[in-house]
Amino acid sequence: MTADLKARVCDAIDAHADDIIAFAEDVQAEPELGYKEVKTTEKVVSRFEALGLDVETELAVTGARARAGSGDFVAAVLGELDALVNPDHPLADPETGAVHACGHNAQLAHLVGTAVGLVESGVVDDLDGAVEFVAVPAEEYLDLDYRRGLLEAGDIEFFGGKQEIIRRGYVDDWDAAAMMHAGSDTPERTVTSDISTNGFVGKFVTYRGTEAHAGAAPEEGVNALNAAMLGMNAVHAQRERFRDEDHVRVHPIITRGGDGVNVVPAEVTMESYVRAASIEAVSDVNESVNRALAAGAMGVGGDVEIEDYPGYMPLRTDETLVAFYDENARDIVGPDAVTAGTPHLSGSTDMGDITQLVPGIHPWTGGFEGAVHARDFRVVDEEMAYVIPAKLTACTLVDLLTSPEAMAAVRAAKAEKRSREEYLDAVRSLRTTTTESYRD
Image 1 (cartoon, rainbow, N blue to C red):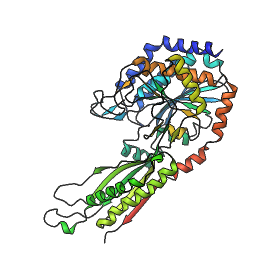
Image 2 (cartoon, rainbow, N blue to C red):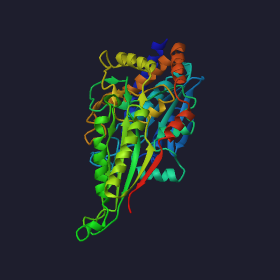
Image 3 (cartoon, rainbow, N blue to C red):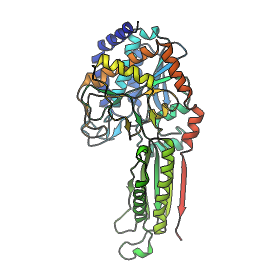
């Protein structure tokens, strides 16, 4: 029975392959940053409505969802709407620098293609559950001044789109979740599905000193740039204490280093992430980083303010979904399609937040050349990048939603995860402000 259902799904996707590819290219041509994805949302909505689906929009400023099928078991398929900023990429928007150099246009092609496969074929009505198709805003953790404005206006609580849809209750009745991600430097037809990722906290750091003439009277000033340099060096001195198994990454940048070369810098700002493989490790390392940053202010007699914002939670894929996905990858792509890849990735994604509540899968798929986020990132195999992942996810959902045993296993895994309230408590605990003053 499942073989027939899968064949119908794949036939429907193949029949619309050119249209799916054209959709991906259309999204790529008009990249938009997080919580600004108005045109991109409209494009997804148009595709959902063409399938006869009822669509809800403005899930979290932007975003859209549609549900097909019926039953009390709900599997969600996700795609991310936003682009990132890399003005050196040849396809970057000349005004904003936005570009789909992380393959989110491929994710949306996967989302729409999966919907086509399950709905156009009629297979979704033969499954023992419903499928929700969700276009989610704001995965890339950037353009933060804009997002802080949304937060201060009360439009959002969290910088990440999936965090917001969790807060707003959209994930409450999901039992499983699936998406895909472009593989970095992976032109081959391969997939890596059994993975984990780091979580992180985002940091805004402001050092304050006292301005003075840098040539005539530097002794009258308190140099905030020196405080920042001391703080970063103190962070570097912590690195030998980071455990290998925690996969810690701390990577600060200075966003404002002073106002004039002949003025002792009175205010210097920084941003940083503190990443690690578990939320406990993130919290422990972040405490030591904050202590180190404060030491910079102490060293020069300045002030420091450290604002910590929730980043994303660590991701861990679900073994039941991984097993189905890998089997379908071998059947559809080839016997050598599944690779071990890098089992743990030190980067982060807000799909990790989803997997804190719901069993999920987040495979890396091939068809892409160049490193994600880099100027040379591009699609080199349109079928592998845009079409085949939709088949893999649709067939995985056929396996899941025709197997009472598999659905029971996934629900048992969900029972071990956090509730929405527990998740929100954990994420909100990461939002802190630390101030230290050493000026006379």
